[in-house]
Length: 292
Image (cartoon, rainbow, N blue to C red; front, side, top):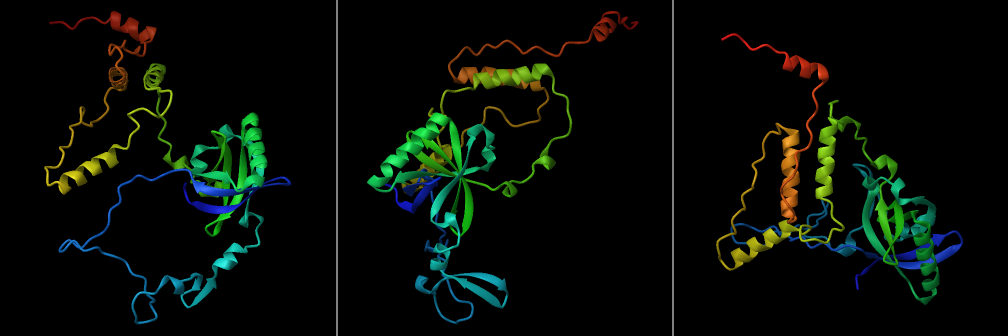
């Protein structure tokens, strides 16, 4: 069972639900250490006090502090942080309920499972799970962890409450400066992109294509070096990156490639090109040949 990260309660009006918070995700990344290249010895960082001429400072002598200036440090103890004058310091407060679609996904962060803490929490836990499920809404909450108050989103996943950290509105950068310059996109190009999207649509994210190939490749390199074997060769790209000259040709080729990858008929009818205006067509038809 995952370790408890935080324990407290979810408050829903006058209802109090004791809970334990556990991480909802696992990190399977390959971890590296720094080492001395001459003798392969581990390189470690040690904590020392810049005012004293001695070795490493033990953790029991290390505290937190806020630097008011270069000469003034305000110490803050863990007990003072636990006793902050905030209702969210010991509870996850539900402030409102909103449709999930009304929240921009860019504001949603890491997720945590909330487990009922004790038998007394079973009924209010199930009540909140069923109420959220029937309403098709999510709860917007506030809580205080790690020295700051956070905004959160509470939802249901497989009859379990899930808490997602959220960014405050002023923490989201304005993307206006990233908007590309004005260009004309033809309707046939939009239909081509939609056709490619339809070809690449899947029912879930559990297929073999959703695998961390980077971690697999690292593990292959580590195993090859451990066994003193040649390193695996880098696979060649089927298409070298280059300048996109014909958008419709690229869309048609992409649709065919996606269908072939899924074992479907790779033949694809070309997307309709932009029609010429009647004026241009008539002008082209009546154009006289050049004299020899």
